[in-house]
Structures are given as C-alpha cells and as structure tokens.
Image (cartoon, rainbow, N blue to C red; front, side, top):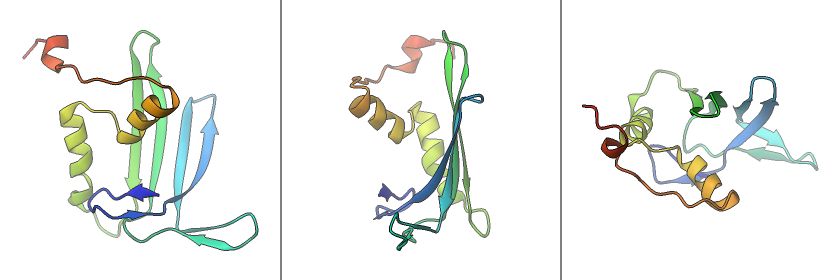
Length: 122
C-alpha cells in the first residue's frame, strides 16, 4: 500500500523487482495486475498511474550518491506529478521510503541539518 503523490488516497502498488549486483541497481517495474501464488489475480489500485523506478548507488565510499529515476506511465505529460519530487529536492530531503527504511530497518535516527551550515556558499 502506498500513498499517492498528488492525492491523499492510498492504494495498492504492484511491481516486479529486478536486482543487478554488477550495476548496484534495483529496478521496480509497475504492473497493473499480477497472479498470487495460488493463481488468483491481484489488481493495482487506480489512484495514480503505473510507474517504473530505478534505484542505484554511485559516487565513492567517501561521497556516496543515491541515484534515483522514475518514469510515470501517463498518456500525456502531467506536471502535477513533478511538483512533489521538486519540493523534496528543494528541501534537500531523501525520498520518504529511504527515510523509513533507514529509521525502521537500519535503526538509524535521522535529523535535519541546515544546509547553509554544511555549505555556506551562496
């Protein structure tokens, strides 16, 4: 279950997941439906368009980078879906799922630091 990007609604998201150890990348490919183990169909909720996501790492061990790409499968470009991601970038935030993973699964406490303190350049 996932909350929508441009709606407060929540819905079922279905994805095939592929891992490339060589590329240090994980691919999530959105699916409209999938079979359960017993063969019964499971259907994605229609609260937002299907999407594909690529998560990867880059940079160095001293300066790691979180590389993230998303493709929304809409009939025409819809700028409403860009705004939540642009807000996240402007605020210097990690994607919410990463923060949840770091806090819940890795047991790390995250805190915000004023970016001007870290990099006082204008």
